[in-house]
Each structure stands twice: as C-alpha cells, then as structure tokens.
Image (cartoon, rainbow, N blue to C red; front, side):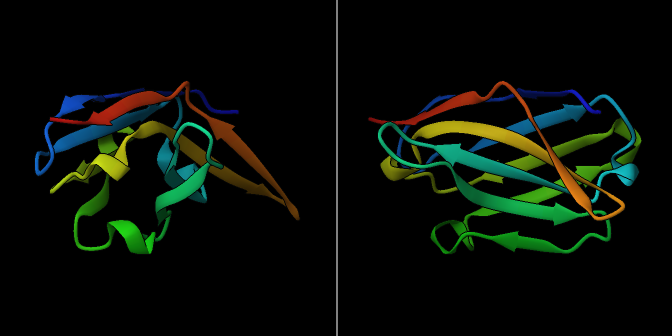
Length: 119
C-alpha cells in the first residue's frame, strides 16, 4: 500500500502558475507509475499527466506545453507544474499511484486538492 498527500492547490488568475506536490509514503521507485488526474464539477475524472518509474511521461492534449510532471526520488514526491492556467483547468486534482503486482494492478489515490482559475 501507499499513502499519498497532495498540496499546492489554490486560487489563481488566468495565465498564472501553480505547482502541485504529491508526497508518497514509500519509495516511488517501487511504484510503476504516478499520475495526476482531475475532476471538474459534473464531469468524469480525467488523466492530466503521468510519469512511469522509468521516467516516461504522458500528457492530456489539453495541457501539453503548459503542464510538466516531474519527480524527486530522494523526497518520494511527484510534482505537477502548471503554467498559463485557464479557467477550464479548474478542478479537484488527485494524485494517483499505480502498482503492478504479478498480473494485477492496484490504484491508490490522494485526498485531492482544489485548483480554481478565475479573475
């Protein structure tokens, strides 16, 4: 198992920046992939960005060129740097850890952090 604690959300004006942090309770080397998802009111949760244990990254088309996912292995922390924020980025952002054991995958979630982009 792994516990995830997010931080860094808040209110920001359009065009502004935020950095979200996700601290894991175990070495992120042992986690196959970590990602950020978001859920806006009335919408389904969607993948924003993903980083694998090998360092490969993947982004939703809507955030490419604006968001960057990274990790600090020594701190067992994954970050999401969000630049040029837009009102449509407003959502609760959740950190996810995906662990594969044998042929089964297990997902763990943080409690979520609110990001509001508004003038």
